[in-house]
Image 1 (cartoon, rainbow, N blue to C red):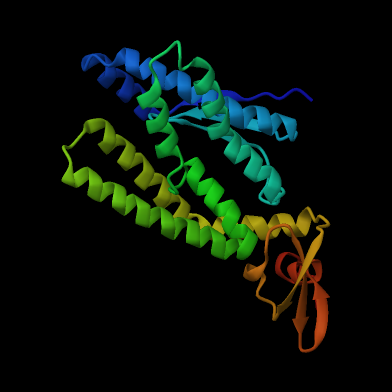
Image 2: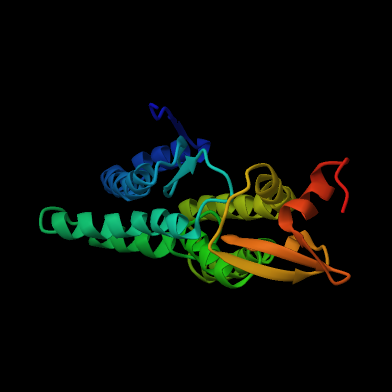
Length: 249
């Protein structure tokens, strides 16, 4: 099936373009945009290899985000490869082109910034994937948000003690809005994860035993057995109680 998607430019992107023209830095911004596109190709190519459907590519004032039309129960291995291939692809292309173009400062600035553990940067995605190896889905999500807030506070502090920069302020404002959005919608995200586990069940290699019926303790990449009053139930039986009002234990 043909993979159809659209490219969308964030409103702040146009503001940054205007600022770069007015300040005489349009050439640097053009190189910056080129590196962003190269970086995003890493995510796109690896996503296509795993047969992930691409819904939309958002061009931001400081980067880009490829939105995949996939659920929350994709394998962690695939998520990790897709998340890490952006930075890796950028590094590979940089090492090929660095003798022809003076993009060292732009390359490393973008690479370092993008790997910060702040939603929605690649650093936060990679961190969340690693957290999901050790913690339940909900706890991993909340930890990702908390760590994002901490690093965002550090970024704000560094901005305040240095000379104020309009571009940095715009980036900070964008990150703050995205972290707030993630916090505000985290319960919906958890609910969606559980909903997919019930209506799109999959078989996983590993199984966890959970005491009680707290479905928020469920992990990614695991089947679950719930032990209630010394009786064991599958996760589908427990989730049926949650999503199907006719379901009974």
